[in-house]
Image (cartoon, rainbow, N blue to C red):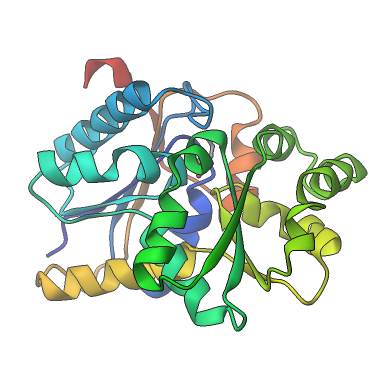
Length: 267
Ligand code: DGL
């Protein structure tokens, strides 16, 4: 089945998830949509996040995708269940995978979650973790400045360190042994976050487990691409500016080539 997989994020952060998908499923053709015109979703209302997610899925469906990954934590938290009700193709998000990965890692069952305001306020990580293990203790904290710091090139600079210290100092006093990076941008800040939390707290990035979930769901539905032609990657965005290429390459680690601007309002 050589139809592409659709991967959606509010912007370019989802490229950190795409990277793992390409690693685990190198044979698959992929169409990525980043809503770069309307990012960040993290401080928007539930109604708007659902509307934007539906538009993104409609766009990807118009490209004949066979399955969709909502690579955005915020869109997963607020809109995944609505998408599963509305659409009739395999759709997965990142939160269930992140919660499962965290439970595999934690030893003392006291864990932290960081994410955007919308993700943290939704308590989706908390609910997912408790569904898997009702004895887990979860501490959560939104870190709204992390996304603009990454997008503006401050990832491993002193400014990010000071902000991270401020956000995380109380969280790490709760004896957590694992911390879920519940936002696509946070793996880019991994070095800085590690410097603040120290070596005794494991950082959990949901991306790899999400890619594994995708592989499983494609296998179960007999949708894996078995053709031997070289995989193609296409990038759709709602806005391109002069920062685009350098940010995109930093997130993905490989050069982005086939980029097209789309008018997302039409979907
Ligand atoms: N992609 C979003 C997430 O993972 C972060 C950026 C945003 O706020 O839209 O939550």
